[in-house]
Length: 80
Image (cartoon, rainbow, N blue to C red; front, side, top):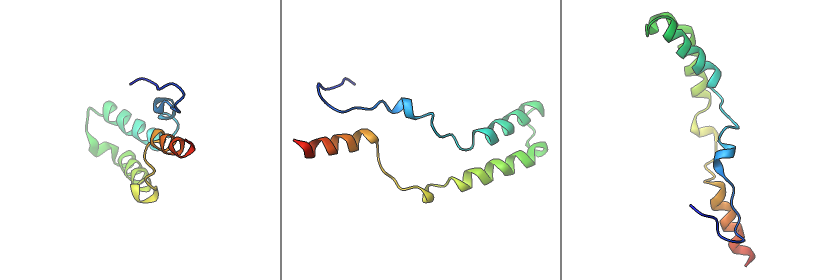
C-alpha cells in the first residue's frame, strides 16, 4: 500500500497500541492458568475480573467511526 503524492495518510499501526483496556486482567488470568497447569477452577477470581472488564468494554458503548484514513480521504475530497 503506497502513499499518493500530496494525499493525507496516517499509519493506523502507530495508534493501535493506545488503548488496551483489559490487558492487565487478561495477563493475570493467563498467568494464573500457566501456574495452575490450565486448571481454570483455581482461577475463578481472575476469570470474573476479565469477564467484567470485557463486558464493560462492549461495542454498545462506542460509536463506530470507521477508519481514520477513510475520514481523512473524505475530508480531502471536499477541499478540491
